[in-house]
Length: 295
Length: 288
View 1 (spheres, rainbow over the protein chains, first blue to last red):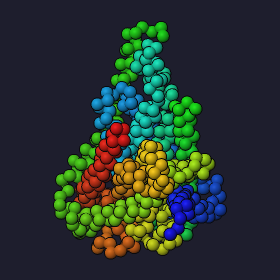
View 2 (view 1 turned 90 degrees about the vertical axis):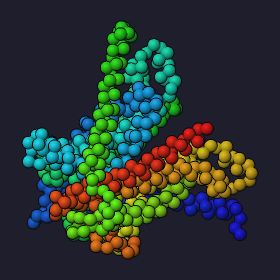
View 3 (view 1 turned 30 degrees about the horizontal axis):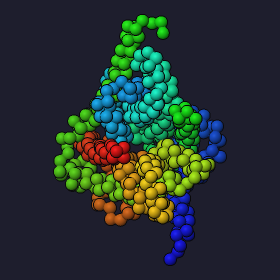
View 4 (view 1 turned 90 degrees about the horizontal axis):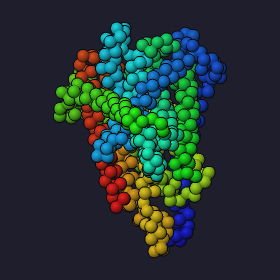
């Protein structure tokens, strides 16, 4: 029998290793991405890779410029945010302070439930129902466009943004609200001048996380955006965002080929962008915690 | 505050109406999508659709292998991620001292949660499929999916552990229990419903994820059921994608895709519903 002190020490060490698992996986992902993606940066130069205007990976000679894919991601994500930020934040404000409690206890879980709808379902809807609808409405050659992808991603981001923003707004201390109402402010004045300004950094966290998710979303854009790797000239044209390119082309790129490395190169760019947004969200959420707790 | 009270009240009504409208739009859009999927697919779903093999080059028959494949992937992923996540959460809440180390681990968890799902797929492809030589298989897909849901499970478990009142721990220490005994016999049982909720949410997420399994586990068509964990499998979400994008007979295959979508959607919503109901009941219990 080992004595309890040694046993405690062993348990603590083992648990510590488990706790490190996330960091280990994250480091693993970074190592793999750079290991497989750096060759393409060396071959054609990081500048030409990011700002090259032509993505013809299977031509002879191939050309690996990801600007059309990068811009497609930016356009689709921007479009999604234009839809989901105003609707999402307004809904969150409505649920948190205006909706009577007996409805709130139904609506809040309902939104959480909808957050679980798999992305491939949105993809199917966008491809077979929204796409054809937009094609007929605008008289387009194809209904699978940047606009279609934006609308689907926008709707898809709603549950996340509503849920997180609502949490932020609700966590503003009650005393803030009571003080404002006691001074004779109306409910709307209290919300617009006291509660929302206090919750701003929390709402911003929700929005940033929403953006990060929209950029990284794969299945919906793969099925809905149309897939043309050209610099988007109009939102009614088909585009091919970065995630869609990776998912669509990985199957046909021979392991170790320049195309294979280029797809990992895209993943590096994607990873760096989402990392940036995550860190931003982290900073905003720290700021929010300080403000609400009042330290 | 020079405005008249009536003007202020009007402003309030105006803005409240706008917000109410926004909520209706949000819920309406989501409801519309679910309604369309169900109305187009429910006619296809019957017992044969669920229990039979696909026939005639995927243009007829059922989705049994996809259902089974998804089940294997979910079970595999959760049995890897659950112990890993729960033990990690135990360390973070019960053992770690606040400081730079814990902050770093937290940053790791947050950033892992934000990695795009297709990047997990690439990682799985490079490491499990190629480097470790597992091939496109259940095991490659399950490990990849486990990494995808690890942050969700850690966070949910952490919340559940932190919700256990400190009196429980002190009472246990006062009786002479060690920290590990306290965790094992007092804290963990009290936090179990919360941890379970997190795991169920993880199951729902895994069942619907497509991008991480495209290159690691999924196949469009297989004539037989998987015989071992090193076989590739069909899976519900990938089946939907494959039917509408790679199908050769859209006239027959698109309705099958809707049917599969109904099955997947019903499963995922049911799983999430169970988790949410469980959590609401558990919250009430802890507040008492």
